[in-house]
Image (cartoon, rainbow, N blue to C red):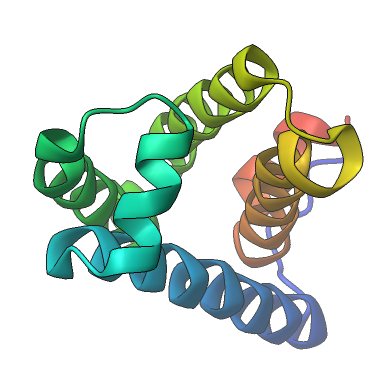
Amino acid sequence: MNEINQSPTYLWVGRILSGLVIAFLLFDAGGKLAKIDPVLKSMEELGLPISSAATIGILLLVITVMYAIPQTAALGALLLTGYLGGAVAIHLRVGNPLFSHTLFPVYVGILLWVSLALRNPKIKEFFWF
């Protein structure tokens, strides 16, 4: 499937889905950087030191911006996949509910890769032979 042309519909659906993923991740990063009480309480419940909120927020912000920029989107998606995998591990460790908490980062990861594949024919070609 060596098709270089990108369907305008796929491109726009990919952009919209990517926008939703980016908005969610920026909201998450902003909550950590602003150190709002619900975020700090959640971090404490997950066993993460509150002092790491800013570091995690900056890391998430930088990687999300990388995902938003077309030239670095694939690297950003790869790094976000690692970040989200860490979130799964943390939720597993504390015994959170499987489908609502533990697998939520997996849902976000699937959405970010599907949206990237829809807006980038090279990624689409990589996954769909």
